[in-house]
Structures are given as structure tokens and as C-alpha cells.
Length: 199
Image (cartoon, rainbow, N blue to C red):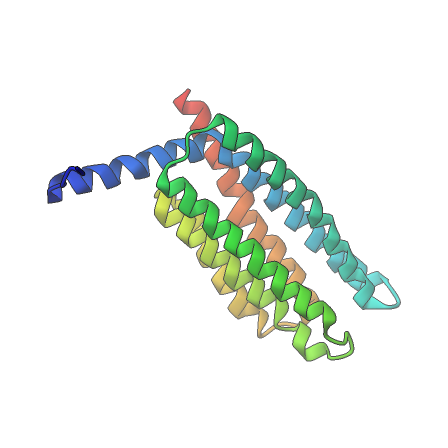
């Protein structure tokens, strides 16, 4: 028979789960955040430079395939972590949020790829949509783990997405590079620093 929790015990259990998730996040997740942050920043800056230098500018977007390195890294790290780390319910929720993010981005980009490249106005929406989704995933992760740098990164992504509607499309790459810096790289380093201080 299942034990019935009173209000106080329920709050203690939830708090304990959040603290355990925060501890797990500090122990290992800073590196994956950093890998994605640096990959997205490097790739977006590469695309920005290629857009300025290539004769056929849309070929610059093939550089986004560099992100497949992150997909492989994430898959390998996820398989390794499954066997080594105890996962809480909160850890699972965060994992599913980022899995949903990855599936949504893949579907979004995949559908944009089948659209004729000459329909340029449709491509203007891609980076703002990606930034909105980044913000969503970062915010959920930040709120769930009570890690404010991720929440700040989420807000920056949302502001950046809005900003993209008012600037030329080539400069969207600079906004997404800034989002990678503020939403992933800085929080990733802070997370690793926090882990070192707790050892």
C-alpha cells in the first residue's frame, strides 16, 4: 500500500528532488551545455562570414551540418550517463524537454529545407523561431533546477528573437551567436565552476 504524504512531506520530497537534480546538473551537465554553446556560436559566426563572402549565399547554410558533432556527442554522453548516473524524475523531465527541443528543431529545419530556397521570406523566420525554442528549453531547465544563468539566457534568447524581426537576416547569425554565449557558454562555465567548488 502506498504511503500518503501530507502537505509538508510532499513539499519536502519535491524540494529534495529539485536539489538532487541540481546536484546532478552541476556534476555533469556543464560540459554538454558548453559543447552546444561553442558549436552554435562557431557555426553561426562561420555562416555569417560565409554569407558575406560566397557568391551563392545560401550555400553558407550548409555549415549548420557542423552541429551534427553535437548530436553525436549528446547521444554518446547520454548513453554513458544512463549507465553511470542515478536519474531523478526532474532529470528525466529536463532530458525530455531537450529531446523535444531537438525533435522540434529537426522538424522545423527539415521542413524549411524542402521549401524552395528562393522563397527567402520564409527563411527569415527560422532563426527567430529557433531562438524562441532555445528560450523555452533554457527557461524550463533554469526554473526546474533553480539555476538563474539559464533563465537569463532564456530571456536573452526571447529578446534576440524579437530583435531579429527588425534587423537584416544576415545579422541573425550574430544574434544567435550572442544567444549561444549568454544562454549556453556562460552558464556552462558557471555550472562547472560551481561543481568544482562543491567537490
